[in-house]
Each structure stands twice: as structure tokens, then as C-alpha cells.
Image 1 (cartoon, one colour):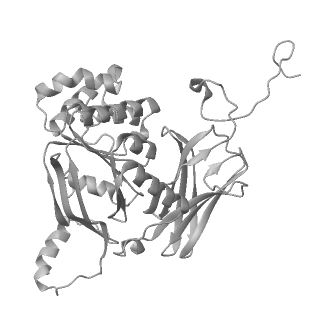
Image 2 (cartoon, one colour):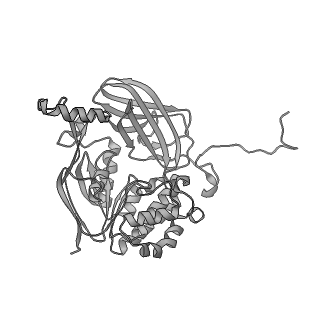
Image 3 (cartoon, rainbow, N blue to C red):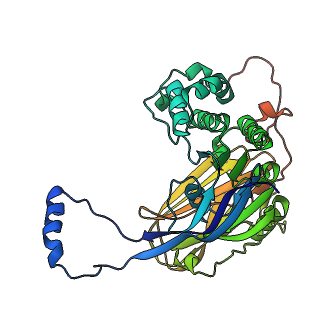
Length: 410
């Protein structure tokens, strides 16, 4: 039987929400220290708590590639932060055997004023590597990240994609025994995503362990052997990748949302629950079969009144490229379920899968951020260049003609 490298039992993380700490000057601290003995015991205001993770147990074997899936806010990143020792659990414990490499956010552990070269050494040192070990892998890291021309440039001048490529290259090449990866491939182009997936497969074949969070189910299917579906801070389902991903896509497509028994979901102020393309002949609400006009609705449940709402929407292609986005301000809605409808005169996209992402704020408070599932599948007839490298993103029909003489307006 393979050796267990990660074992967790009863993991829970509780946060206090709904309170704001005000700025304290030195005079306030001194005054508080003087008056504290004369105050009555007890809190001046009640606090509201939210369990981001509750009673989670798992066992991961050496060389296993485990996928974590679920909605935004479900607890996936919190679990990775606990396993990487960034966050201390409120209850439960986890045993990790081996050196851990983490890639939770783009550029974590990097310094913007240092050059790419200096940041490789800095990040490697944070991962526990000796200088000689980093030097041995240095050229391979730079080549993989594709930043040879900019390696002596301060990181603050790198694009987000360049920072992500460098961060992934460092984490993957410095040979941690356990690699924790959280949704960092979404900002890479298709070619680099393929390189990353290939590298992670290479890492797993060498006997190292990977825990991989992604909203892109094609990546999960390709890379992971086993998948855990986390919802509302608890493990909803776990099992073979194809079985769990299929169940997840089916449940999300039907609009069904799992509600945990601990009541935490009811404490949330808002939750997107489904999305659909309106007014189309096909009985498949997530398939776009015409260029336009298009009406797309996003259903959200409000558990409290929305007073100064801000609603954002963006569209990504399968490579994670941002194609379009807009926002609506000053929304006022009563508690209940509402459908936020966006009507577009046309949506000329090439055939293939696309991902909507929607957010809802009330003033400066984020209520929900949803990368919509299932993906939107565009099935319109392609009218672009036959070669992908020249076809671009849009599927715009055109008419061609030849006129005599030079171009001009009469």
C-alpha cells in the first residue's frame, strides 16, 4: 500500500464576520489600558461567525494527483492554506510528511522591486532550497517560464502572465515532495497551460504528490485520478475523477445546489444559484446556437436587502483570456430570488466552450463571486479563417467582393 503523505481529520476553520476594527492611535491604546480594569465584562456588540471549513477529513497517498472542485467560497483555498501551514485551523489537525511547495496566488513570495533572477533565489529559499540547488535548476526554470529576455528586469515590470509563469516554474522545478496548486493556470495562455499540465504529470510520475484546485473541468479530468467536491465548507462527494466531475457538472447544470446541514449557507447574504440562455428554441439552456440577439440570465438569492449593489460580469474563453466585461451600479433589490438579465444584440463567438463569471457587491462588501458552471458551449457554424492561429476570438460573418480601381469613397 502506498505511503500516506497527507492525513487530515476534523479540520475546521471559523472566521468572525460583520465586525470592523477602527484605527487606534497611541493615545487610544494608553486610554484603553487605563480604563480596562474598570469596565464590565462582556462584548459591546454581538459577532457573527462563519465556518469556511468544517469537519473535513482526507488521506492522500504519495504520488497521487488529487483534484479539489466546487464553487467559489466553498472552502477549497482555505483547505490548501491549512495544509500549507499558512492558516491555523480552528479545530482538527493535519499531518504532512514531506517538503511542501505552494502556488496559491500569482507572485506569492515574490518582491516587485527585485529582478526575475533575484526572485527565483528568494522564492527558492522560501521553499527551503539551498543556493546550490537553485543554481542547478536556474536555467531550466527560466527557459520553462519563457522570460529569458526579462530575467534582469524588476518584477514590477512583468505582466501578470509572466509573473504566473515564473512562479509556477519555480514551484514545479525545485522538486517539493508535495505540490499544492490553486487555480493559477486560468491566467495562462493555452500553450503554457499545456506545459504546466505536462509538468505536473511529470512531477506525479516521479513519485511526488499534487493537490490541484481548478474550475476548468477539462484540466481536472486530464490530470487528476481522484477528486474531492467541497461545498459550503464540507466534503460533498469524493471518488474517481470522471465520476465526481460528471456528477458536479450534472448538478450545476440542473441548478441544484447542495445545502450543508450546519446552516452556514443560510448565513450568507447572497448566492448565485444558476445561469441560463433565455428565449431560444433549443431545450438546452447553456448552449448558444445563434450569433444573436442573446439574453442571458443569472439567478441570485438574496437573504437580505441589497441597498447599493454592484454587479459585474465577464466572459472568458477556454484558454482563460478575458473577452468581454461590464458592470451595473446602484442596484436596489429586496430579499428573495432574482434573475439578473443581460441582453446583447449579438455575441459573435467562435464555436467552443466559454466561461461566465459574475459578482455581486453591496457597497464595498463582496457577497458572491461565481465562475459559472456548466460552461457555455457555442455551437454556431464557424465563418472565420480555417487555421486556428489566424481565426482570432470572434466569429463575424463577412461578404467579399472585388471592385475595379483603387480604394476610395466617391
